[in-house]
Image (cartoon, rainbow, N blue to C red; front, top):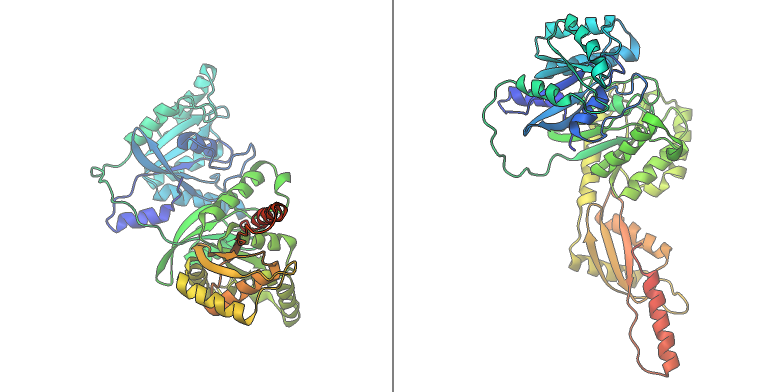
Amino acid sequence: MSEFDVTDMVEAASEGETPVPVVAVVGRPNVGKSSLVNRIIGRREAVVEDVPGVTRDRVAYDAEWQDIPFTLVDTGGWETSVSGLAAMVARQAEYAAQAADVVLFVVDATVGITDADAAVTRVLRRARKPVVLAANKVDGRMQEADALELWNLGVGEPYPISALHGRGTGDMLDAVVEAFPEKPEPVIDPVEEEGPPRIALLGRPNVGKSSLLNRVADEERVVVDSVAGTTRDSVDELIELGGQTWKFIDTAGIRRRYRALQGADYYATMRTGQALERAEVAVVLMDVSEPLAEQDIRVVEQVVESGRGLVLAFNKWDTLDEERRYYLEKEIDRQLSRVSWAPRVNVSARTGRHMEKLVPALETSLAGWNQRIPTGQLNNWVKDQVASTPPPARGGKQPKILFATQADARPPHFILFTTGFLEDNYRRFIERRLREDFGFEGSPVHISMRIREKKNTAGTPQNRASKGSSRNDGKARGGRR
């Protein structure tokens, strides 16, 4: 299910395009907004937990009712007269309501009208947007009387529903669709071209991923706070940088002990992996004010294992003194030597220092990830490497490279057809020379073997059996590596 940014839809409308209607789901914390979003879209996409404040950013999803598509925006709990993180979450909810075509106001019918509900209602009246009032947690006829009290909010008929069980959501969605603004008949679009490059922002919690996203967007797109784990959902943002559109995916921080996580943190970490699968390039952010941690290295390894392009971004660079910079360089040389091919940018999300270097690094990584070498050129190059540095002998026999081909890109994958097994050191030598001569900067490179030993039918039956056993062993060792 794809996700979109509400702001981009509003901008598209101003440019004369016809976007689908936008429905913002708002309400105070823990009234069941994310549960209702999951019910409407038909899958557990929004993070849900039975504690207030799990959703903090505004996240948009594709939805449909009665063959009418629309965009559903899940928001954090909307409270008034709050400060700090809660105030920023409430501000995101208010932004979503202002940008939406219809507001779906969710209230807990079993609690009744609270001061917070009444305050939100006053803000919604000033926004002058159609409001559909969802009286949630009405699980049976016994609770329907509770919903009638919500008429006193003065925003129209309350629709008794149960987001948990789906009760009454059909009537509520009928009212939402009926409130959509009039628009021209839908036109069938041509097949969409491949979208903008997808960039995942990864890193352990609280290294500044959301701050970096807000900085490149030049506005407050997502909630930022010093509390670790503020971001729980993956948030897609279309951002213009360097004359090109990029899709940034801000993710929850990857935590070290994945299996030990519970509740919202478990689903947030799971969605981080899904965000990496959707991305083409990952920007791994590290906090240079602290020593590089095991979690930082694990995130980098996860990107390499997934085969995505990689950019290393060292955040809070403006806080370094000379001593810390010296030791940091030692840490990078020692702990990140495996990815010395990745572009590196030293930035400050807080001050904007060197943010202009991010786009060239992304372009470099994306180019390396997509790069191909023609087969003829590759084989001539391999002959030169073998002539200057032959493979080491194994078991008294020196393997030969018969043929080479690039089987795939995104990431580059090379297959070497050989007469015997190539040691790991030699394959690393081939990779290093590939990078020196052809680039592939910012992308992992995979090299695998296919072993083809010469058939020899001469000799005694025992010798032939021995040869056959050797061939089978060679093939077993020659799988994709």
